[in-house]
Length: 328
Image 1 (cartoon, one colour):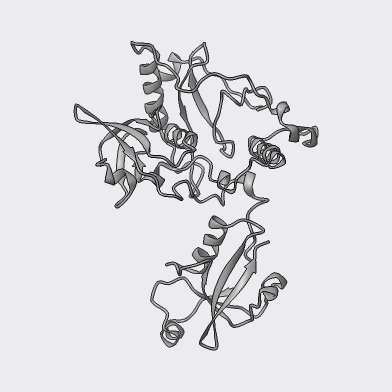
Image 2 (cartoon, one colour):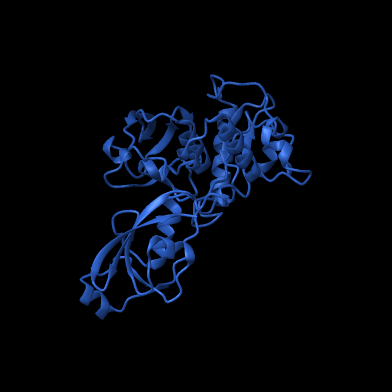
């Protein structure tokens, strides 16, 4: 049995964990490390996206990552964790820990404390909300059951431009060894630079390497599922009413475009922006998107934070009007 080749340990409290060494996505439901007795980290398992907590996990994928970890354990020359060791840092070392109280510290509280400390120091950046980017963001869709095998390459992506193909096995990403979605997401999170990112892969018996040219917004990911960010995500208190096909034709709105008519009840924050009942909302924050009213409103929560101002383009009696909405 594969598990018998490991010493299994379960930690249910984060307070005793060295956060500088055991780094993972603190918004997750659970996370797994494969480590040696000297605390060398061979790999990670457990990750998710906005579609659900287990969308990127499977028992087969866990077993695959465990086997890769065992391979690294017996590797010659000795496997070296690319992350340098640093001074231990515990939950109690956050300045914001003092205001947490005596209750249990949840993992997502770590991100909240870190954000509070960095804001106090003036080092927090808005882009920090995009932690643990998906490998999809650079064009690499990995298999769930074999977490280093490319299932699909996104057209016109950074990965496609360097020649990666379906079936390739990713060996390294951003200088980190890969055996799972969690490994890939962690590796991407460590790459804070906008400079090209190294990637290595095997196709057949041939090893390849290249540098991924990153888009300016390459880290941006749907963050609406993250509990650590709930206090930053804006409300979108519209009252959407879907348009009929006839109404779309009369207004010249393309099929499939996400639009809606504002209902009779207008929230005070929307009223302050100038929105009126009956306005047809055609875009929020820029270009129109495809989908439904849910997609249009969800896009706001994915792209913007409280306190930011976005443009709202509406049709009022058939005429275009641009409004400015302060998100709250």
